[in-house]
Image 1 (cartoon, rainbow, N blue to C red):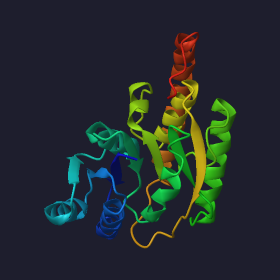
Image 2: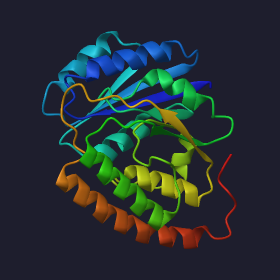
Image 3: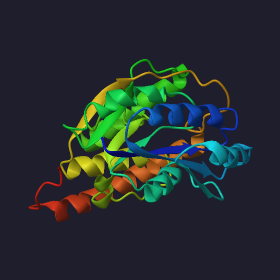
Image 4: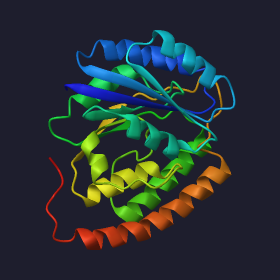
Length: 242
């Protein structure tokens, strides 16, 4: 590992964002590589932006990306990816539900894979949210085959050059499926790695919002049609994997 961009999407995470950035910064400084931390404030209506601007004053290698109004989880990730300059990109949410110290588990697989997908070994979410996630993963698998064990886990690591081959259109919760299915179609190598999932200490998740769920389903069906057309164009092309 020579260099690493760390993207942190955040929406209304005033109670969690400072702790998340401090942890990421502490761990990143011990990695022994050239790194940058990119916090994306996705149109937050609370003090997330103000806290982020304070963090920028004393956090090494820190950059803040802000946009208004809120674009959604996918829009926040795309903004962070566009700002990233390093060869590898890791992303982790600003809600503090992952231990970024476990980035070492993902980094161990960079010699064998282009995308390393964390999966929540013991997911700390309410029953209904876990049930919804199970149904979503089954639907994704039905439409696209096996992508990874936990499609929407927010802790992943990948080569930045994957983005040159995979088109990301979704601004919503469907972006992980879009990214992984597009990468699979282009034969990029992927592996699964277990990561710890922590209970949310403060704030409210947005993934269970009915509007978010309905938009994800609409985006999923539209993407299935688009990917089918892309696959026809890809026939006969050489593998993209390194």
